[in-house]
Image (cartoon, rainbow, N blue to C red):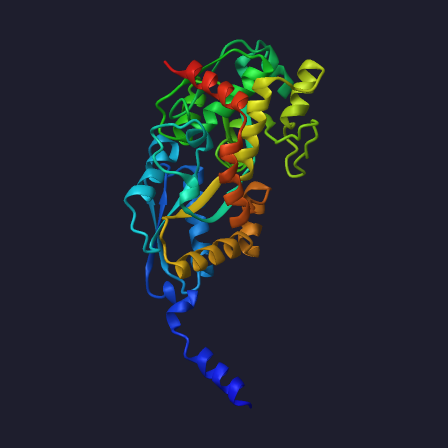
Length: 355
């Protein structure tokens, strides 16, 4: 061995152990803050995913899931932004609110692009309704266009589920009104069962789990799933969803033509944002690089763990999609590029939902 090769070998062997991500979390505890109520479908997902995340983060830290509901995830985002120590031991997992940032909502003091993006998860959004909203009951999803005023429920006027539901109904031409004050999706579903509201937007996995018995009883029906369409109207149908049509197909059946107009443009934009990136994991700015590297490695590996994918398919009949760091950061940057017309429609929809 030459002296140069020997020196290189000795230098590599002398590299401090702290530079290896595997050692950062050894013997430590990672707190995962979930910006949602305990017991909801997303909370259950977070707790299940945490078991796989622990296995794949180098060093295998203990993981504690801590709920911090409020403002549809905004409270938890602000906490991570303003108060959480950037020591690698606290991250946020949960939904995000692209509109709050795009519209300059003063309640959201955090800026998503200022965090360290760890990884993301996509989960297709769907609309469902009570079947007794039209005389004789819904026979097929397109019958929704015959409904009178429908009530939609959510935690706040800017919350995504309510906005997606109301925009969908607006595009379809169905009168609607928002009811706010619910703590989370579970409370909204209970309100729908009590007929306080009649229409709700949620994820396909939640629809197939929490609302399964309600639908089987004939009291509820899946209306459509949301899909982002290209400027020329093209879109890709989801091969894992066969119990309801894609929104463009629903609209065409109800009205005999493809959807168009400013409200459709707003719904289409928001569908693309929230469907591709439904849940995200973030670390505070300034988190040590080796911790961020370990978290990112763990999130991607856990998302693609064969056992996790198998469990998702067995439970929901559909896999969760993984959103890379590169793609997640690109989605965050795109918030600055949304058209003024879309934002204007969003503002009008939000104002129309205020009491």
